[in-house]
Length: 253
Image (cartoon, rainbow, N blue to C red; front, side, top):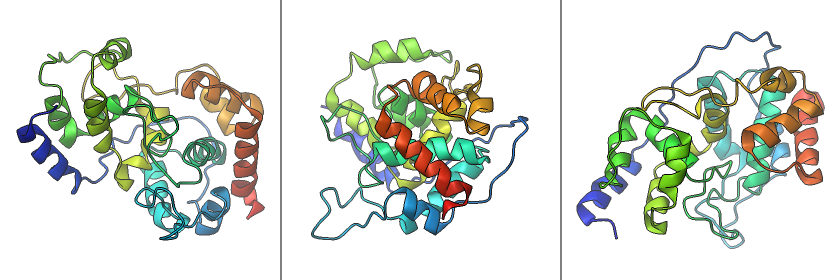
């Protein structure tokens, strides 16, 4: 059990957390898109509503109108401007969260897994550490851990095996606010994988063909994103979600 003197100030800070992003410079040639519209986002998440008596996870559920400003801010802050990249990330977010109905892994309930793209541990931990004004509080949740400035995904992965379910879930809580939760897919794509605390990593941008394939709106580019960036299996359901989202952003709505 985490000590109360650690939990109380940490959880209090969560209530005032706002997204703190570190924009990166990207020089890839692209065809920039405008902001996502309410009609587009509503269509992408299949018109999700959050009725008081009908939502299984009401406190997590968000409509398109509620999510829209955070989605657009996430894209802007992480400098993601093209239709192809936005379609890939938005389709992932909608698919993983049931159209923004939840932001915690409830099925089967993996400890520490959450945000709108349902990032797994230790990515959630790395994300929390990447937010400058949350770094110290996040580190304080694992007081026995002696962090150096250097950190690797492999070392964070091994760390995951030693943490309790409670600790993972408390760390996850810091990034569940809308400002951070709706920007996690953008962070993962552009800045995950840092080699030093406080610095932006390369995300998936250095994976061969990643940016070019997504910007060109090819299925091969999207498959590369799902397989080699997200690290999951390409399925017909995921493909359908992507193609549908791409059509909507390309003027289908």
